[in-house]
Image (cartoon, rainbow, N blue to C red):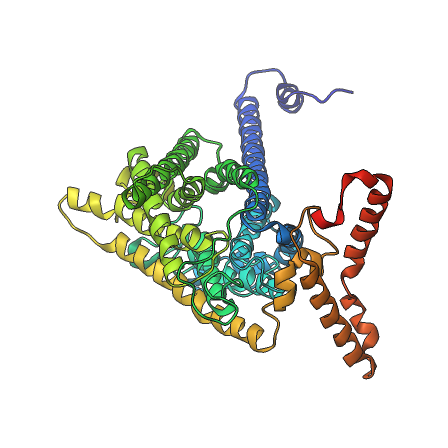
Length: 548
Protein backbone atom coordinates (compact mmCIF):
# COMPACT_ATOMS: atom_id res chain seq x y z
CA UNK A 1 0.00 0.00 0.00
CA UNK A 2 1.51 3.34 -1.05
CA UNK A 3 2.03 6.13 1.43
CA UNK A 4 -0.58 8.87 1.02
CA UNK A 5 0.63 12.25 -0.18
CA UNK A 6 0.41 15.33 2.00
CA UNK A 7 -2.64 16.55 0.09
CA UNK A 8 -4.41 13.20 0.45
CA UNK A 9 -3.70 13.14 4.19
CA UNK A 10 -5.07 16.62 4.66
CA UNK A 11 -8.18 15.87 2.55
CA UNK A 12 -8.77 12.78 4.66
CA UNK A 13 -8.75 14.92 7.79
CA UNK A 14 -10.63 18.01 6.59
CA UNK A 15 -12.55 17.02 3.45
CA UNK A 16 -12.27 18.30 -0.11
CA UNK A 17 -13.76 21.72 0.50
CA UNK A 18 -11.17 24.47 0.43
CA UNK A 19 -11.25 25.61 4.03
CA UNK A 20 -8.87 27.36 6.36
CA UNK A 21 -8.19 24.07 8.16
CA UNK A 22 -7.30 22.31 4.90
CA UNK A 23 -4.93 25.09 3.84
CA UNK A 24 -3.34 25.20 7.30
CA UNK A 25 -2.83 21.43 7.22
CA UNK A 26 -1.07 21.64 3.85
CA UNK A 27 1.06 24.59 5.03
CA UNK A 28 2.09 22.85 8.24
CA UNK A 29 2.90 19.64 6.41
CA UNK A 30 4.98 21.50 3.81
CA UNK A 31 6.93 23.32 6.50
CA UNK A 32 7.57 20.08 8.40
CA UNK A 33 8.84 18.41 5.22
CA UNK A 34 11.06 21.40 4.49
CA UNK A 35 12.53 21.33 8.00
CA UNK A 36 13.14 17.60 7.68
CA UNK A 37 14.91 18.10 4.34
CA UNK A 38 17.07 20.90 5.79
CA UNK A 39 18.10 18.64 8.67
CA UNK A 40 18.97 15.84 6.27
CA UNK A 41 21.06 18.11 4.03
CA UNK A 42 22.98 19.57 6.97
CA UNK A 43 23.55 16.12 8.43
CA UNK A 44 24.90 14.75 5.17
CA UNK A 45 27.09 17.83 4.72
CA UNK A 46 28.73 17.36 8.13
CA UNK A 47 29.24 13.63 7.66
CA UNK A 48 30.79 14.21 4.24
CA UNK A 49 33.04 16.97 5.59
CA UNK A 50 34.05 14.72 8.48
CA UNK A 51 35.00 11.98 6.04
CA UNK A 52 37.24 14.44 4.16
CA UNK A 53 38.87 15.49 7.44
CA UNK A 54 39.40 11.86 8.37
CA UNK A 55 41.07 11.30 5.00
CA UNK A 56 43.71 13.74 6.17
CA UNK A 57 45.05 10.86 8.28
CA UNK A 58 46.12 9.26 5.00
CA UNK A 59 47.87 12.50 4.12
CA UNK A 60 49.60 12.66 7.49
CA UNK A 61 50.68 9.03 7.22
CA UNK A 62 52.15 9.42 3.73
CA UNK A 63 53.83 12.73 4.51
CA UNK A 64 55.42 11.41 7.70
CA UNK A 65 56.46 8.13 6.14
CA UNK A 66 58.09 9.88 3.20
CA UNK A 67 59.82 12.54 5.28
CA UNK A 68 61.79 10.22 7.54
CA UNK A 69 64.41 7.56 6.90
CA UNK A 70 63.13 4.26 5.59
CA UNK A 71 64.19 2.29 8.67
CA UNK A 72 61.40 3.89 10.74
CA UNK A 73 58.47 3.85 8.32
CA UNK A 74 56.42 1.11 9.98
CA UNK A 75 56.68 2.90 13.29
CA UNK A 76 55.11 6.18 12.12
CA UNK A 77 52.46 4.38 10.08
CA UNK A 78 51.39 2.48 13.19
CA UNK A 79 51.28 5.72 15.13
CA UNK A 80 48.91 7.23 12.58
CA UNK A 81 46.62 4.22 12.74
CA UNK A 82 46.56 4.41 16.52
CA UNK A 83 45.68 8.11 16.30
CA UNK A 84 42.45 7.07 14.64
CA UNK A 85 41.69 3.87 16.53
CA UNK A 86 42.54 5.21 19.94
CA UNK A 87 41.06 8.57 19.08
CA UNK A 88 37.67 7.03 18.36
CA UNK A 89 37.58 5.25 21.73
CA UNK A 90 38.88 8.24 23.67
CA UNK A 91 36.60 10.78 22.01
CA UNK A 92 33.61 8.51 22.60
CA UNK A 93 34.43 7.95 26.25
CA UNK A 94 35.82 11.28 27.46
CA UNK A 95 36.87 13.76 24.79
CA UNK A 96 33.52 14.96 23.51
CA UNK A 97 32.22 15.42 27.04
CA UNK A 98 35.24 17.48 28.06
CA UNK A 99 35.01 19.70 24.99
CA UNK A 100 31.26 20.18 24.50
CA UNK A 101 29.39 18.27 27.20
CA UNK A 102 26.88 20.30 29.16
CA UNK A 103 27.05 23.41 26.96
CA UNK A 104 24.60 25.91 28.38
CA UNK A 105 24.61 29.60 27.41
CA UNK A 106 23.09 30.53 30.76
CA UNK A 107 26.10 29.22 32.71
CA UNK A 108 28.61 31.81 31.57
CA UNK A 109 32.27 30.84 31.19
CA UNK A 110 33.37 27.34 32.20
CA UNK A 111 36.80 25.70 32.11
CA UNK A 112 35.77 22.37 30.63
CA UNK A 113 32.72 20.29 29.72
CA UNK A 114 31.30 17.79 32.20
CA UNK A 115 28.47 15.78 30.57
CA UNK A 116 27.97 13.28 27.77
CA UNK A 117 30.65 10.74 28.68
CA UNK A 118 30.32 7.62 26.49
CA UNK A 119 27.67 9.55 24.52
CA UNK A 120 25.33 9.14 27.44
CA UNK A 121 23.42 12.37 26.71
CA UNK A 122 21.40 13.32 23.66
CA UNK A 123 24.23 14.09 21.22
CA UNK A 124 24.11 15.04 17.54
CA UNK A 125 25.95 12.05 16.09
CA UNK A 126 27.02 13.87 12.93
CA UNK A 127 28.59 16.62 15.04
CA UNK A 128 30.38 14.02 17.16
CA UNK A 129 31.78 12.35 14.05
CA UNK A 130 33.02 15.63 12.60
CA UNK A 131 34.73 16.63 15.84
CA UNK A 132 36.26 13.16 16.22
CA UNK A 133 37.91 13.54 12.81
CA UNK A 134 39.32 16.89 13.94
CA UNK A 135 40.70 15.40 17.14
CA UNK A 136 42.59 12.67 15.28
CA UNK A 137 44.60 15.27 13.39
CA UNK A 138 46.14 16.81 16.49
CA UNK A 139 48.45 14.07 17.76
CA UNK A 140 49.60 13.35 14.19
CA UNK A 141 51.21 16.79 14.23
CA UNK A 142 53.47 15.84 17.13
CA UNK A 143 54.18 12.35 15.77
CA UNK A 144 56.20 13.67 12.86
CA UNK A 145 58.41 15.91 15.00
CA UNK A 146 59.51 13.18 17.40
CA UNK A 147 59.74 10.39 14.83
CA UNK A 148 62.76 8.04 14.69
CA UNK A 149 63.73 8.34 18.36
CA UNK A 150 60.67 8.20 20.59
CA UNK A 151 59.41 5.12 22.44
CA UNK A 152 56.01 3.66 21.72
CA UNK A 153 55.14 4.15 25.42
CA UNK A 154 55.90 7.87 25.08
CA UNK A 155 53.71 8.12 22.02
CA UNK A 156 50.78 6.41 23.70
CA UNK A 157 51.13 8.55 26.81
CA UNK A 158 51.43 11.89 25.04
CA UNK A 159 48.64 11.01 22.62
CA UNK A 160 46.36 10.16 25.52
CA UNK A 161 47.36 13.31 27.36
CA UNK A 162 47.52 15.80 24.52
CA UNK A 163 44.27 15.53 22.65
CA UNK A 164 42.07 15.13 25.64
CA UNK A 165 42.83 17.95 28.00
CA UNK A 166 44.84 20.27 25.79
CA UNK A 167 42.69 20.23 22.70
CA UNK A 168 39.26 18.66 22.65
CA UNK A 169 39.93 15.14 23.69
CA UNK A 170 40.11 12.09 21.59
CA UNK A 171 42.21 9.26 22.85
CA UNK A 172 43.59 12.18 24.62
CA UNK A 173 42.22 13.52 27.77
CA UNK A 174 43.81 16.55 29.24
CA UNK A 175 45.33 19.28 27.08
CA UNK A 176 43.33 19.82 23.93
CA UNK A 177 39.82 19.66 25.37
CA UNK A 178 40.52 22.92 27.16
CA UNK A 179 41.60 24.63 23.92
CA UNK A 180 38.55 23.47 21.97
CA UNK A 181 36.23 24.32 24.85
CA UNK A 182 37.76 27.80 25.21
CA UNK A 183 37.44 28.67 21.51
CA UNK A 184 34.24 26.96 20.38
CA UNK A 185 31.96 26.06 23.28
CA UNK A 186 29.19 28.49 24.15
CA UNK A 187 30.78 28.52 27.60
CA UNK A 188 34.36 29.09 26.42
CA UNK A 189 36.01 32.32 27.58
CA UNK A 190 37.46 33.00 24.10
CA UNK A 191 34.40 31.81 22.19
CA UNK A 192 32.56 34.22 19.89
CA UNK A 193 29.46 32.05 20.43
CA UNK A 194 29.23 32.84 24.16
CA UNK A 195 26.29 34.86 25.42
CA UNK A 196 28.70 37.60 26.49
CA UNK A 197 31.88 37.06 24.43
CA UNK A 198 35.19 38.44 25.64
CA UNK A 199 35.45 42.20 24.93
CA UNK A 200 32.26 41.92 22.93
CA UNK A 201 33.84 39.80 20.23
CA UNK A 202 35.64 36.64 21.27
CA UNK A 203 38.48 35.12 19.27
CA UNK A 204 37.72 34.52 15.58
CA UNK A 205 39.04 31.11 14.51
CA UNK A 206 36.60 29.23 12.31
CA UNK A 207 38.41 25.91 11.89
CA UNK A 208 41.32 25.77 14.31
CA UNK A 209 44.54 27.59 13.47
CA UNK A 210 45.03 27.98 17.22
CA UNK A 211 43.13 25.19 19.05
CA UNK A 212 44.20 22.50 16.58
CA UNK A 213 47.36 23.44 14.70
CA UNK A 214 49.11 25.78 17.08
CA UNK A 215 48.21 23.52 19.99
CA UNK A 216 49.86 20.57 18.26
CA UNK A 217 52.81 22.67 17.12
CA UNK A 218 53.58 23.96 20.61
CA UNK A 219 53.38 20.42 21.98
CA UNK A 220 55.78 19.33 19.23
CA UNK A 221 58.20 22.11 20.22
CA UNK A 222 58.15 21.13 23.89
CA UNK A 223 58.66 17.45 23.19
CA UNK A 224 61.38 18.05 20.58
CA UNK A 225 63.40 20.14 23.04
CA UNK A 226 63.08 17.67 25.91
CA UNK A 227 63.57 14.60 23.72
CA UNK A 228 66.63 15.99 21.97
CA UNK A 229 67.81 15.62 18.37
CA UNK A 230 68.38 12.39 16.47
CA UNK A 231 71.83 10.82 16.70
CA UNK A 232 74.31 12.61 14.48
CA UNK A 233 71.94 15.40 13.50
CA UNK A 234 73.71 18.25 15.31
CA UNK A 235 76.39 16.47 17.39
CA UNK A 236 78.96 13.74 16.77
CA UNK A 237 79.28 10.58 18.85
CA UNK A 238 81.29 12.47 21.49
CA UNK A 239 78.69 15.21 21.84
CA UNK A 240 80.74 17.81 19.98
CA UNK A 241 78.61 20.15 17.86
CA UNK A 242 78.98 19.63 14.12
CA UNK A 243 80.05 22.54 11.96
CA UNK A 244 77.07 21.86 9.72
CA UNK A 245 73.96 19.83 10.69
CA UNK A 246 73.94 16.38 9.15
CA UNK A 247 71.19 16.15 6.51
CA UNK A 248 68.58 13.51 7.31
CA UNK A 249 66.33 14.06 4.35
CA UNK A 250 63.27 12.18 3.19
CA UNK A 251 63.56 8.65 1.89
CA UNK A 252 60.61 9.12 -0.49
CA UNK A 253 59.67 12.46 -2.02
CA UNK A 254 56.87 10.60 -3.81
CA UNK A 255 55.20 9.80 -0.49
CA UNK A 256 55.75 13.38 0.65
CA UNK A 257 53.92 14.76 -2.36
CA UNK A 258 51.14 12.20 -2.00
CA UNK A 259 50.74 13.19 1.64
CA UNK A 260 50.73 16.90 0.82
CA UNK A 261 48.00 16.54 -1.80
CA UNK A 262 46.04 14.26 0.56
CA UNK A 263 46.13 16.91 3.27
CA UNK A 264 45.19 19.71 0.87
CA UNK A 265 42.25 17.65 -0.35
CA UNK A 266 41.13 16.88 3.20
CA UNK A 267 41.31 20.56 4.09
CA UNK A 268 38.21 21.11 1.96
CA UNK A 269 36.36 19.25 4.67
CA UNK A 270 38.38 20.78 7.49
CA UNK A 271 37.61 24.42 6.64
CA UNK A 272 34.31 24.52 4.71
CA UNK A 273 32.88 21.81 6.98
CA UNK A 274 33.49 24.05 9.98
CA UNK A 275 30.52 26.17 8.90
CA UNK A 276 28.60 23.12 10.26
CA UNK A 277 25.54 23.81 8.09
CA UNK A 278 24.95 24.37 4.37
CA UNK A 279 21.15 24.44 3.98
CA UNK A 280 20.60 28.10 3.12
CA UNK A 281 21.90 30.42 0.46
CA UNK A 282 23.79 32.50 3.02
CA UNK A 283 25.45 29.46 4.57
CA UNK A 284 26.33 28.22 1.10
CA UNK A 285 27.95 31.55 0.29
CA UNK A 286 30.05 31.39 3.46
CA UNK A 287 31.17 27.82 2.77
CA UNK A 288 32.01 28.75 -0.83
CA UNK A 289 34.15 31.67 0.31
CA UNK A 290 35.92 29.36 2.76
CA UNK A 291 36.76 26.91 -0.03
CA UNK A 292 38.09 29.69 -2.29
CA UNK A 293 40.18 31.25 0.47
CA UNK A 294 41.55 27.86 1.44
CA UNK A 295 42.66 27.33 -2.15
CA UNK A 296 44.28 30.75 -2.50
CA UNK A 297 46.05 30.55 0.85
CA UNK A 298 47.60 27.19 0.02
CA UNK A 299 48.57 28.15 -3.53
CA UNK A 300 50.13 31.48 -2.56
CA UNK A 301 52.15 29.91 0.24
CA UNK A 302 53.44 27.10 -1.98
CA UNK A 303 54.66 29.62 -4.56
CA UNK A 304 56.01 31.95 -1.89
CA UNK A 305 57.97 29.18 -0.19
CA UNK A 306 59.36 27.80 -3.43
CA UNK A 307 60.44 31.03 -5.13
CA UNK A 308 61.74 32.66 -1.95
CA UNK A 309 63.83 29.57 -1.20
CA UNK A 310 65.17 29.65 -4.76
CA UNK A 311 66.14 33.32 -4.51
CA UNK A 312 67.86 32.79 -1.15
CA UNK A 313 69.88 29.87 -2.52
CA UNK A 314 70.79 31.83 -5.65
CA UNK A 315 72.02 34.72 -3.54
CA UNK A 316 74.20 32.37 -1.50
CA UNK A 317 75.53 30.10 -4.23
CA UNK A 318 74.79 31.81 -7.52
CA UNK A 319 72.84 28.72 -8.59
CA UNK A 320 69.08 28.56 -9.05
CA UNK A 321 67.64 25.43 -7.41
CA UNK A 322 64.04 24.47 -6.72
CA UNK A 323 63.35 23.01 -3.27
CA UNK A 324 60.38 20.63 -3.28
CA UNK A 325 60.25 20.62 0.52
CA UNK A 326 59.90 24.41 0.63
CA UNK A 327 56.99 24.20 -1.82
CA UNK A 328 55.21 21.39 0.03
CA UNK A 329 55.65 22.72 3.55
CA UNK A 330 54.95 26.25 2.35
CA UNK A 331 51.64 24.98 0.98
CA UNK A 332 50.79 23.31 4.29
CA UNK A 333 51.72 26.44 6.25
CA UNK A 334 49.40 28.43 4.00
CA UNK A 335 46.59 25.99 4.74
CA UNK A 336 47.22 26.29 8.47
CA UNK A 337 47.44 30.07 8.23
CA UNK A 338 44.16 30.57 6.36
CA UNK A 339 42.23 28.18 8.62
CA UNK A 340 41.34 30.80 11.24
CA UNK A 341 40.10 33.58 8.97
CA UNK A 342 38.91 31.64 5.94
CA UNK A 343 35.31 32.83 6.45
CA UNK A 344 36.04 36.43 7.42
CA UNK A 345 38.64 37.71 4.92
CA UNK A 346 38.37 38.57 1.25
CA UNK A 347 40.09 36.38 -1.37
CA UNK A 348 42.82 38.97 -1.97
CA UNK A 349 43.60 38.91 1.77
CA UNK A 350 43.76 35.11 1.70
CA UNK A 351 46.37 35.40 -1.04
CA UNK A 352 48.41 37.85 1.06
CA UNK A 353 48.10 35.62 4.13
CA UNK A 354 49.39 32.72 2.05
CA UNK A 355 52.41 34.67 0.76
CA UNK A 356 53.42 35.63 4.30
CA UNK A 357 52.81 32.04 5.46
CA UNK A 358 55.46 30.82 3.00
CA UNK A 359 57.95 33.23 4.51
CA UNK A 360 56.92 32.23 8.04
CA UNK A 361 57.70 28.60 7.21
CA UNK A 362 61.14 29.34 5.77
CA UNK A 363 62.11 31.57 8.69
CA UNK A 364 60.78 29.10 11.25
CA UNK A 365 62.54 26.13 9.69
CA UNK A 366 65.86 27.99 9.60
CA UNK A 367 65.40 29.11 13.21
CA UNK A 368 64.80 25.54 14.40
CA UNK A 369 68.07 24.42 12.79
CA UNK A 370 69.94 27.38 14.26
CA UNK A 371 68.61 26.52 17.73
CA UNK A 372 69.40 22.80 17.16
CA UNK A 373 65.77 21.78 17.53
CA UNK A 374 65.37 18.58 15.52
CA UNK A 375 61.99 18.51 13.82
CA UNK A 376 61.88 15.54 11.46
CA UNK A 377 59.00 16.92 9.37
CA UNK A 378 59.09 20.67 10.14
CA UNK A 379 55.80 20.47 12.04
CA UNK A 380 56.86 23.27 14.39
CA UNK A 381 57.15 26.02 11.76
CA UNK A 382 54.20 24.67 9.77
CA UNK A 383 51.72 24.25 12.61
CA UNK A 384 52.89 26.37 15.54
CA UNK A 385 54.13 29.41 13.64
CA UNK A 386 51.65 28.99 10.78
CA UNK A 387 48.81 28.70 13.28
CA UNK A 388 49.94 31.77 15.22
CA UNK A 389 50.20 33.78 12.00
CA UNK A 390 46.74 32.68 10.93
CA UNK A 391 45.14 33.85 14.19
CA UNK A 392 46.95 37.21 14.06
CA UNK A 393 46.17 37.70 10.36
CA UNK A 394 42.48 37.21 11.15
CA UNK A 395 42.71 40.15 13.53
CA UNK A 396 44.22 42.23 10.73
CA UNK A 397 42.18 41.35 7.63
CA UNK A 398 38.63 40.42 8.81
CA UNK A 399 36.03 42.80 7.45
CA UNK A 400 32.60 43.73 8.79
CA UNK A 401 30.52 42.15 6.02
CA UNK A 402 32.23 38.75 6.25
CA UNK A 403 32.19 38.75 10.07
CA UNK A 404 28.48 39.52 10.11
CA UNK A 405 27.63 36.70 7.72
CA UNK A 406 29.85 34.08 9.36
CA UNK A 407 29.63 34.99 13.07
CA UNK A 408 26.66 37.35 13.30
CA UNK A 409 28.63 40.24 14.75
CA UNK A 410 30.73 43.05 13.32
CA UNK A 411 31.24 45.41 16.26
CA UNK A 412 34.97 44.70 16.20
CA UNK A 413 36.68 44.09 12.88
CA UNK A 414 40.19 43.61 11.53
CA UNK A 415 42.68 46.30 12.49
CA UNK A 416 43.40 47.37 8.92
CA UNK A 417 39.67 47.86 8.32
CA UNK A 418 39.32 49.69 11.63
CA UNK A 419 41.90 52.20 10.46
CA UNK A 420 40.08 52.50 7.15
CA UNK A 421 36.92 53.61 8.94
CA UNK A 422 38.94 55.96 11.14
CA UNK A 423 38.70 54.23 14.52
CA UNK A 424 41.94 52.32 15.07
CA UNK A 425 39.96 49.94 17.34
CA UNK A 426 42.44 47.31 18.54
CA UNK A 427 39.87 45.02 20.19
CA UNK A 428 39.75 42.12 17.72
CA UNK A 429 43.50 42.07 17.10
CA UNK A 430 44.07 42.24 20.86
CA UNK A 431 41.82 39.22 21.43
CA UNK A 432 43.61 37.32 18.67
CA UNK A 433 46.98 38.02 20.29
CA UNK A 434 45.57 36.94 23.65
CA UNK A 435 44.39 33.70 22.05
CA UNK A 436 47.90 32.99 20.73
CA UNK A 437 49.43 33.63 24.15
CA UNK A 438 46.80 31.47 25.83
CA UNK A 439 47.46 28.44 23.62
CA UNK A 440 51.23 28.78 23.91
CA UNK A 441 51.14 29.27 27.68
CA UNK A 442 48.57 26.57 28.39
CA UNK A 443 50.24 23.86 26.34
CA UNK A 444 53.72 24.68 27.65
CA UNK A 445 52.56 24.82 31.26
CA UNK A 446 50.79 21.47 31.13
CA UNK A 447 52.87 19.53 28.61
CA UNK A 448 56.39 20.43 29.83
CA UNK A 449 56.20 18.67 33.22
CA UNK A 450 54.49 15.74 31.56
CA UNK A 451 57.37 15.28 29.09
CA UNK A 452 59.94 15.66 31.85
CA UNK A 453 58.13 12.95 33.79
CA UNK A 454 58.41 10.63 30.79
CA UNK A 455 62.10 11.45 30.52
CA UNK A 456 63.03 10.80 34.16
CA UNK A 457 61.11 7.50 34.13
CA UNK A 458 63.00 6.44 30.99
CA UNK A 459 59.83 6.24 28.93
CA UNK A 460 60.68 8.92 26.41
CA UNK A 461 63.59 7.93 24.18
CA UNK A 462 64.58 4.62 22.61
CA UNK A 463 67.94 2.94 23.20
CA UNK A 464 70.80 4.39 21.06
CA UNK A 465 71.39 1.01 19.45
CA UNK A 466 67.72 0.71 18.54
CA UNK A 467 67.84 4.21 17.06
CA UNK A 468 70.87 3.27 14.97
CA UNK A 469 69.29 0.06 13.68
CA UNK A 470 65.86 1.62 13.25
CA UNK A 471 62.63 1.26 15.17
CA UNK A 472 61.08 -0.93 12.48
CA UNK A 473 63.74 -3.61 12.80
CA UNK A 474 64.09 -3.40 16.58
CA UNK A 475 60.44 -3.04 17.61
CA UNK A 476 58.17 -3.93 14.70
CA UNK A 477 59.44 -7.35 13.61
CA UNK A 478 61.33 -6.23 10.55
CA UNK A 479 61.93 -3.38 8.18
CA UNK A 480 59.27 -1.85 5.95
CA UNK A 481 61.48 -2.35 2.89
CA UNK A 482 63.91 -5.10 1.94
CA UNK A 483 66.75 -2.71 1.17
CA UNK A 484 67.45 -1.35 4.64
CA UNK A 485 71.03 -0.19 5.14
CA UNK A 486 71.53 -1.72 8.58
CA UNK A 487 74.99 -2.96 9.42
CA UNK A 488 75.59 -6.43 10.82
CA UNK A 489 77.66 -4.84 13.58
CA UNK A 490 74.71 -2.73 14.77
CA UNK A 491 72.41 -5.74 14.74
CA UNK A 492 74.91 -7.82 16.72
CA UNK A 493 75.33 -5.10 19.33
CA UNK A 494 71.58 -4.70 19.79
CA UNK A 495 71.07 -8.47 20.02
CA UNK A 496 73.83 -8.81 22.59
CA UNK A 497 72.29 -5.99 24.60
CA UNK A 498 68.95 -7.79 24.68
CA UNK A 499 70.51 -11.12 25.59
CA UNK A 500 72.20 -9.44 28.54
CA UNK A 501 68.91 -7.89 29.56
CA UNK A 502 67.18 -11.26 29.51
CA UNK A 503 70.01 -12.83 31.50
CA UNK A 504 69.88 -10.08 34.11
CA UNK A 505 66.15 -10.44 34.62
CA UNK A 506 65.73 -14.23 34.40
CA UNK A 507 67.06 -14.74 37.89
CA UNK A 508 64.55 -12.34 39.40
CA UNK A 509 61.57 -14.29 38.12
CA UNK A 510 60.79 -11.74 35.48
CA UNK A 511 62.35 -13.54 32.57
CA UNK A 512 59.04 -14.49 30.99
CA UNK A 513 57.91 -10.90 30.92
CA UNK A 514 60.92 -10.06 28.80
CA UNK A 515 60.20 -12.48 26.01
CA UNK A 516 59.23 -9.51 23.92
CA UNK A 517 62.90 -8.54 23.99
CA UNK A 518 63.97 -11.64 22.13
CA UNK A 519 67.17 -11.11 20.12
CA UNK A 520 66.31 -9.49 16.83
CA UNK A 521 68.74 -11.47 14.64
CA UNK A 522 65.83 -13.83 14.03
CA UNK A 523 64.76 -11.40 11.32
CA UNK A 524 68.29 -11.15 10.00
CA UNK A 525 68.67 -14.93 10.17
CA UNK A 526 65.77 -15.35 7.78
CA UNK A 527 67.46 -12.94 5.40
CA UNK A 528 70.79 -14.78 5.64
CA UNK A 529 69.19 -18.15 5.01
CA UNK A 530 67.38 -16.74 2.01
CA UNK A 531 70.66 -15.39 0.69
CA UNK A 532 72.34 -18.79 1.11
CA UNK A 533 69.57 -20.48 -0.84
CA UNK A 534 69.81 -17.87 -3.58
CA UNK A 535 73.58 -18.33 -3.80
CA UNK A 536 73.19 -22.10 -4.06
CA UNK A 537 70.64 -21.72 -6.85
CA UNK A 538 72.68 -19.09 -8.70
CA UNK A 539 76.37 -19.83 -8.03
CA UNK A 540 77.49 -17.46 -10.79
CA UNK A 541 75.69 -14.41 -9.47
CA UNK A 542 78.50 -13.39 -7.10
CA UNK A 543 78.39 -12.85 -3.37
CA UNK A 544 74.77 -11.89 -2.82
CA UNK A 545 75.17 -11.52 0.94
CA UNK A 546 77.70 -8.74 0.52
CA UNK A 547 75.10 -6.65 -1.27
CA UNK A 548 72.43 -7.02 1.38
